[in-house]
Image 1 (cartoon, rainbow, N blue to C red):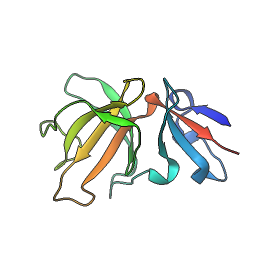
Image 2: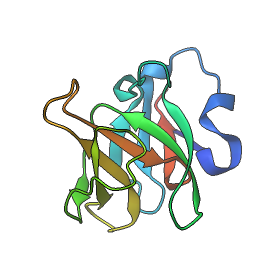
Image 3: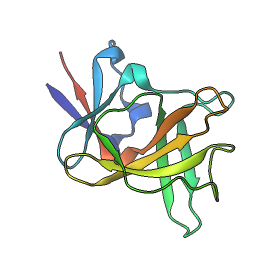
Length: 128
Protein backbone atom coordinates (compact mmCIF):
# COMPACT_ATOMS: atom_id res chain seq x y z
CA UNK A 1 0.00 0.00 0.00
CA UNK A 2 1.28 3.46 -0.93
CA UNK A 3 -0.36 6.54 0.57
CA UNK A 4 -0.32 9.91 -1.19
CA UNK A 5 -0.95 13.10 0.76
CA UNK A 6 -3.18 15.22 -1.49
CA UNK A 7 -2.72 18.32 0.63
CA UNK A 8 0.98 18.34 -0.22
CA UNK A 9 1.17 17.03 -3.76
CA UNK A 10 -2.23 17.65 -5.36
CA UNK A 11 -4.12 14.91 -7.17
CA UNK A 12 -3.38 16.43 -10.57
CA UNK A 13 0.36 16.03 -9.92
CA UNK A 14 0.21 12.33 -9.04
CA UNK A 15 0.74 10.19 -12.11
CA UNK A 16 0.35 6.42 -12.01
CA UNK A 17 -0.27 3.92 -14.78
CA UNK A 18 -3.27 2.32 -13.12
CA UNK A 19 -5.36 5.05 -11.50
CA UNK A 20 -8.36 2.73 -11.26
CA UNK A 21 -6.66 1.14 -8.23
CA UNK A 22 -6.65 4.44 -6.33
CA UNK A 23 -8.85 4.72 -3.27
CA UNK A 24 -9.61 8.01 -1.55
CA UNK A 25 -9.48 7.78 2.25
CA UNK A 26 -10.38 10.13 5.08
CA UNK A 27 -7.18 11.96 5.99
CA UNK A 28 -7.87 11.68 9.69
CA UNK A 29 -9.01 8.06 10.25
CA UNK A 30 -8.14 6.39 6.89
CA UNK A 31 -11.73 5.17 6.23
CA UNK A 32 -12.52 4.37 2.60
CA UNK A 33 -14.53 7.22 1.04
CA UNK A 34 -14.38 6.76 -2.76
CA UNK A 35 -12.49 5.19 -5.64
CA UNK A 36 -10.85 6.86 -8.61
CA UNK A 37 -13.60 5.51 -10.89
CA UNK A 38 -16.14 7.46 -8.76
CA UNK A 39 -14.75 10.85 -9.81
CA UNK A 40 -17.51 12.87 -11.48
CA UNK A 41 -16.82 15.38 -14.24
CA UNK A 42 -19.42 18.14 -14.19
CA UNK A 43 -20.11 18.97 -17.86
CA UNK A 44 -18.11 22.04 -18.83
CA UNK A 45 -16.51 22.32 -15.37
CA UNK A 46 -14.48 19.15 -14.82
CA UNK A 47 -13.90 17.31 -11.54
CA UNK A 48 -11.64 19.69 -9.59
CA UNK A 49 -12.93 23.05 -8.43
CA UNK A 50 -11.43 26.01 -6.58
CA UNK A 51 -14.30 27.48 -4.58
CA UNK A 52 -14.89 30.18 -1.95
CA UNK A 53 -17.74 30.22 0.56
CA UNK A 54 -19.59 33.26 1.88
CA UNK A 55 -17.16 33.49 4.82
CA UNK A 56 -14.22 33.88 2.44
CA UNK A 57 -12.84 30.38 3.04
CA UNK A 58 -11.28 28.74 -0.03
CA UNK A 59 -11.66 25.07 -0.87
CA UNK A 60 -10.12 22.81 -3.50
CA UNK A 61 -12.97 20.36 -4.14
CA UNK A 62 -13.03 17.10 -6.08
CA UNK A 63 -16.44 15.90 -7.29
CA UNK A 64 -17.51 12.26 -6.97
CA UNK A 65 -20.65 10.44 -8.15
CA UNK A 66 -20.46 7.77 -5.41
CA UNK A 67 -19.06 7.92 -1.89
CA UNK A 68 -19.15 5.66 1.15
CA UNK A 69 -18.84 6.22 4.88
CA UNK A 70 -20.22 9.75 4.83
CA UNK A 71 -22.82 11.10 7.21
CA UNK A 72 -25.18 13.98 6.39
CA UNK A 73 -24.99 16.47 9.26
CA UNK A 74 -27.23 19.28 7.99
CA UNK A 75 -30.47 19.87 6.19
CA UNK A 76 -30.29 20.76 2.49
CA UNK A 77 -29.52 24.43 1.79
CA UNK A 78 -30.45 26.09 -1.49
CA UNK A 79 -28.71 29.36 -0.66
CA UNK A 80 -25.17 29.98 -1.88
CA UNK A 81 -24.86 26.70 -3.79
CA UNK A 82 -21.74 26.39 -5.91
CA UNK A 83 -23.57 24.06 -8.28
CA UNK A 84 -27.03 25.38 -9.11
CA UNK A 85 -29.75 24.07 -9.16
CA UNK A 86 -28.36 21.64 -6.55
CA UNK A 87 -28.88 22.15 -2.82
CA UNK A 88 -26.00 21.28 -0.52
CA UNK A 89 -25.76 19.19 2.64
CA UNK A 90 -22.74 19.19 4.96
CA UNK A 91 -21.14 15.73 5.10
CA UNK A 92 -18.73 14.31 7.65
CA UNK A 93 -16.77 11.09 7.88
CA UNK A 94 -19.04 8.49 9.47
CA UNK A 95 -16.22 7.23 11.73
CA UNK A 96 -14.20 10.23 12.93
CA UNK A 97 -16.83 12.95 12.28
CA UNK A 98 -14.33 15.17 10.42
CA UNK A 99 -15.96 17.51 7.90
CA UNK A 100 -15.06 16.13 4.45
CA UNK A 101 -17.30 18.17 2.15
CA UNK A 102 -20.83 18.36 0.81
CA UNK A 103 -23.50 16.27 -0.83
CA UNK A 104 -25.29 18.09 -3.65
CA UNK A 105 -28.89 17.07 -4.35
CA UNK A 106 -31.56 18.00 -6.90
CA UNK A 107 -34.11 15.31 -7.68
CA UNK A 108 -35.06 16.81 -11.07
CA UNK A 109 -31.46 16.84 -12.34
CA UNK A 110 -29.22 14.10 -13.73
CA UNK A 111 -27.48 12.98 -11.67
CA UNK A 112 -29.86 13.55 -8.77
CA UNK A 113 -26.88 13.76 -6.39
CA UNK A 114 -23.10 14.00 -6.30
CA UNK A 115 -20.46 14.82 -3.71
CA UNK A 116 -17.90 17.59 -3.47
CA UNK A 117 -15.06 16.60 -1.14
CA UNK A 118 -12.28 18.81 0.16
CA UNK A 119 -8.99 17.68 -1.33
CA UNK A 120 -7.01 18.51 1.83
CA UNK A 121 -9.24 16.10 3.79
CA UNK A 122 -8.40 13.10 1.56
CA UNK A 123 -5.41 10.87 0.94
CA UNK A 124 -4.94 8.33 -1.83
CA UNK A 125 -4.32 4.68 -1.09
CA UNK A 126 -2.73 3.06 -4.12
CA UNK A 127 -2.83 -0.74 -3.91
CA UNK A 128 -0.08 -2.34 -5.91
